[in-house]
Amino acid sequence: MTTAEQMHADHDHTHGEGCGHVAFPHNDHVDYAHEGHVHRERAGNWEECEVSEHTTHDDHEHNHESGCGHVAVPHGDHTDYVHEGHRHAAHEGHYDEH
Picture 1 (cartoon, rainbow, N blue to C red):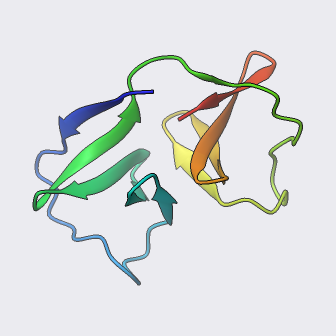
Picture 2 (cartoon, rainbow, N blue to C red; picture 1 turned 90 degrees about the vertical axis):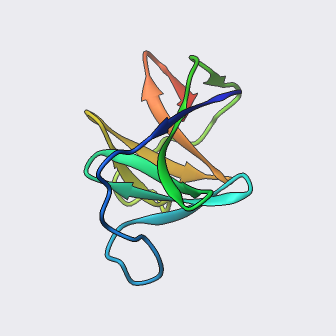
């Protein structure tokens, strides 16, 4: 799974503990949900942390929904759920890795 590297221009907010945005671990860094985007800090800049290809999460038996116990992250036009160190999004009867 590859992630797209796109700098988030004009990002004047510094994310960190207590900044008011949902934070969650993702691979070797922390992502922050902000204005429908997911941001990560890299080399002193903020960039979008997005999967660049459609990747399904196979054998996912848990249904994500409000109150399921996983962190809900607003993302574009849907909600992702943080589960086992990555984000899942419902898509056409299965879950995608986000």
